[in-house]
Image (cartoon, rainbow, N blue to C red; front, side, top):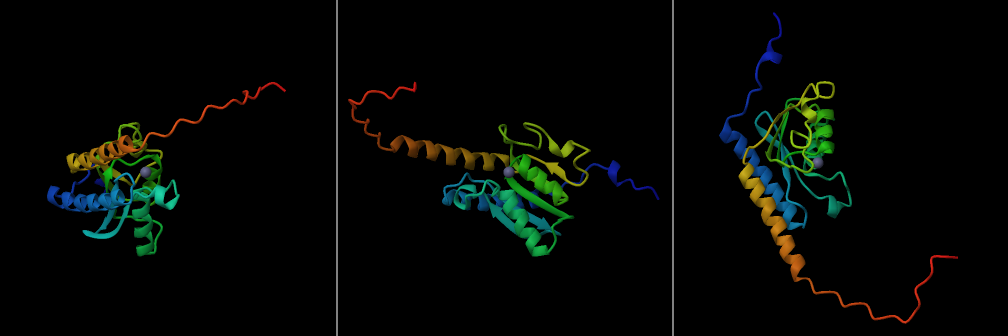
Length: 187
Ligand SMILES: [Zn+2]
C-alpha cells in the first residue's frame, strides 16, 4: 500500500490542548523575566505529556545558546536518553531563531508550535523559513500564532519596563575637564 501520509495536511492538535501547552510555555517565559531575561519559554510534549521545559537565560548562564527552545530540547533529550526526539512537539512563546530551528531539525522534532512572530530573527517564516527547505528539513512541521496576543503582550510589557527602568537611572556625572593635551596619533 502506498504511503499517502506525505500528501495529507499536517494534523493540528485540538485548539484547547495547544493553548494548554502554550500556557505552560508562557509560565516558563515569566520565569525568564524574573531573572531579567527576555521572557521566552518553551515546553516539550510527547504523547500528550509535558516531558521538559525551559526558559531563556543566555545572560545569567553566560551562554549565547541558552535560548528557551535549546534549554527545553536538552532537558527532553536527557530525560528520554536520546539525542533525537521523534514524536515530540515543542511549544514556544516566540518564533524560533536560526539556531533553535536548526537544533529542532537535528532533534528530528515532529512539530514546533510558536506563539508570537519575531520579525527581527524569526526563522520559521518571518526573516526566512528554514522549515520549508526540503533539503534541510524532512521531519519538523511548524505552526504559528497559538496564543500570540498573550505572548506579544508579555514581551511588550517586559521591554516597556526595561525602558522605564533605564530612564530612571541617574545621569552620569560629566568627566572633569582635563588640561592634558590630547595625545597625538602621530608618532
Ligand atoms: Zn533561538
